[in-house]
Length: 116
View 1 (cartoon, one colour):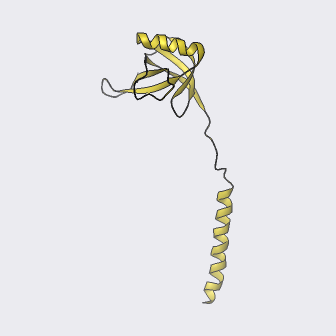
View 2: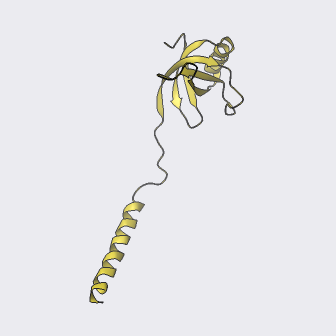
View 3: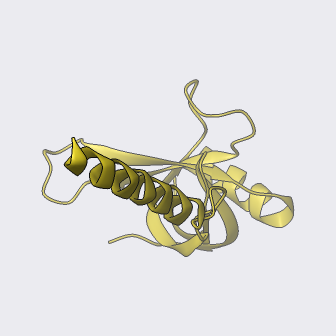
C-alpha cells in the first residue's frame, strides 16, 4: 500500500507531462506545396476527373505492363488552360510544370513535345 502512495502521483505526473508535450505540436500544420515537371500524353478530361480539370496527363508506369499508366488531373487558368485544351484535342505529348495539389496538378507552364 505504501508503494501505491508513491507510484500513483508519479504516474499522474508522467501522464500530465505527456499531455503537455503533445500539445506543443501544431495540429493545423499544412504540408508544403511541391512543385515539379511531368511529361506525358495530354488527353481531354474523363468522366472520373474532378470538376474544373482542364485536361489529363497520361504517363506510362516504369516497369509496368504495356498499357498501364498513371493519370494526373490538370488544372489551369488563362493561356495555360487554352494550350492544354488544344494539346488534349490532338492527343499530343507535352511537359507541364506546376504545383501538386490534393485534386491534381495546378499547371503554371506547358512545353510541347515532352516525354521520352
